[in-house]
Image 1: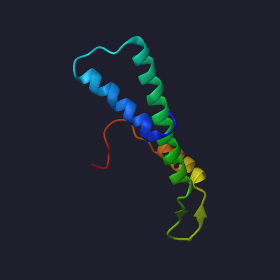
Image 2: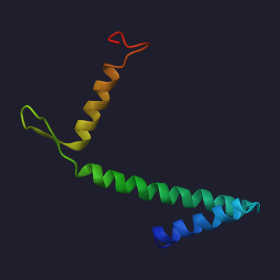
Image 3: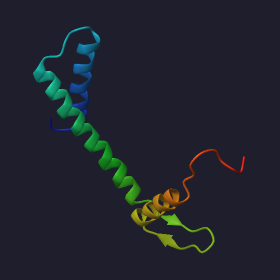
Image 4: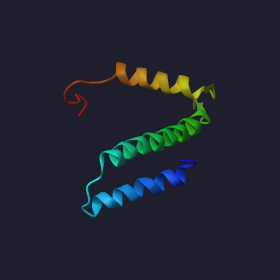
Length: 90
């Protein structure tokens, strides 16, 4: 497929065929899987591109942190503070 619109059009054609009660052939099932991978890759690329332009600013110091570093630090912080069981503060 040459662009995402054509990919989506074909995904929708296959979905309509399945929804109408027709069985997809093994070739169509393989095509559907490949089309979904293309589509998901496109979406992942858009999200990555958007997140790469986000700036994280510390409200107290005004320091700007790179998006990838900020996300990594947030993930590590969440991992360290993850609670098991009910919240004792409730």
